[in-house]
Image (cartoon, rainbow, N blue to C red):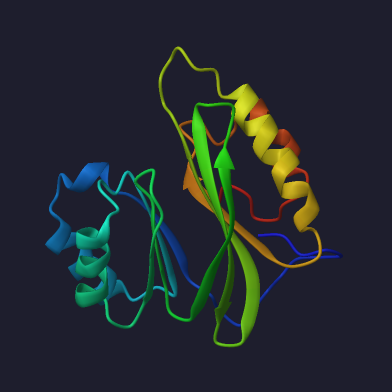
Length: 169
């Protein structure tokens, strides 16, 4: 999380990122987990198809959430208001989606990321580009989540870690 001038500590926003492996465990089971765990925000990566059928599935299975099916296998579920504010490619080996979110009166930006895990694609370049894309967001709290396919202690995270609190915890 990041807030200009200090650490952002809302009373309690629970945000979870799930790598769904394209539904290997079953979408019904995943939706049941969302309902039972009841986090405020769920970012799903490798969520398979994100067309109208998948969108309808998440709306029906998780009616307490605003659902955003984003393409590139990403889905965002939010107990509150969510608007997509931007998206893009990260050096051709990753993708991100940026949202303006409001949960129980707390306004923040959420960035959901998916970087490919191929050994042929070094993570240095998409992570460097991601850090540059995060720079203009210093005016409000930010939650960064996703599948980075990179060890959390990687040196390539340093530019992000320097600007974010509780990064990769």
